[in-house]
Image 1 (cartoon, rainbow, N blue to C red):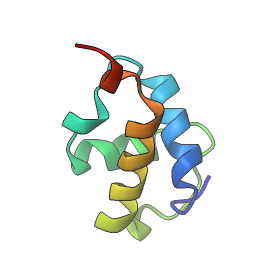
Image 2: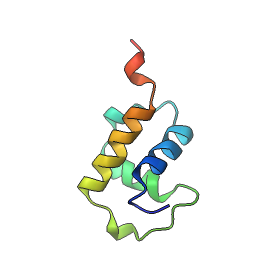
Image 3: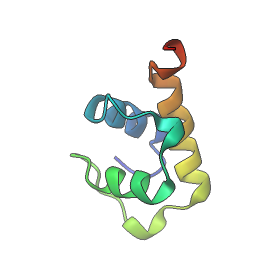
Length: 69
């Protein structure tokens, strides 16, 4: 996976961290979790706020937290 694979990354994060609410994560943690994903093999320095925002948005779409009260 590369940084540009934001939907694929989000799905992998949702699978790996099912109890994490992606609306409440900070970008420092998000970046580290992406780097630790199996299959992620892009340059760590190529991440930026826009990329992390896209990953977070896709993760929010994939999560069930919006449905829970």
